[in-house]
Amino acid sequence: MHQFPEQPERALALKIISKKIEEFQVLISKPKLKEHELQKFFEKNPEFLTFGTKYRTLFPQILLKRTRGKDLRPDFLLERVTDCFCDILDIKLPKKKILRGKTERRGFTTDVYEAIAQVCEYREYFNDPRHKKWIKKKYHLSVYKLNILVLIGLGKNIEKEDLVKIRNQHPLVEVITYNDILKQIVCLKDLLEKFGVGFKRR
Image (cartoon, rainbow, N blue to C red; front, side, top):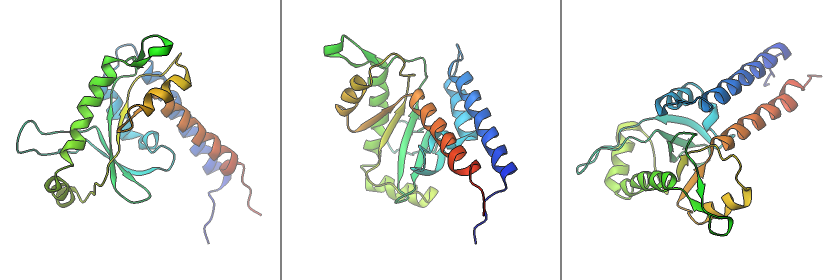
């Protein structure tokens, strides 16, 4: 029979995740933050990119070999829980702005469109069955109808309706903000606190 961790162990786990949330908030507020610092943080704390329980394993900077042009190296491949196929995530800086223009004609900024153009190369790469076969043999990873995700910007002072509307105009790429990540991990902590630490064995 499964045994729940003792109360002190669960309390310690919540203390650890609370500390990680604080570290993340400090990191994304850093004035001269570099992308490699974000990469290092997420590699060390993969729970920030599991999006609840959507992904079970993260694979950082897997090399995607090409016969023509430069090889590709996405920041993360994310292995889905439900079917074990991988999605791809590329991270950009939190300081990048996401939306531009007036309310009635708002759209993504040049930074976002450049990021989208970059990650779309990954989709084209896996349109070739030979590449799917190679990554399966090399890394034992499977790709089928992969989702492309870009993590960029904080998303502050943006109307939620505007962001949802513009996201829907670009269904091939999911644009995620650092505040989205923060909200998800805080929600996960709250759930653990409510249903984990608050649980008492009879």
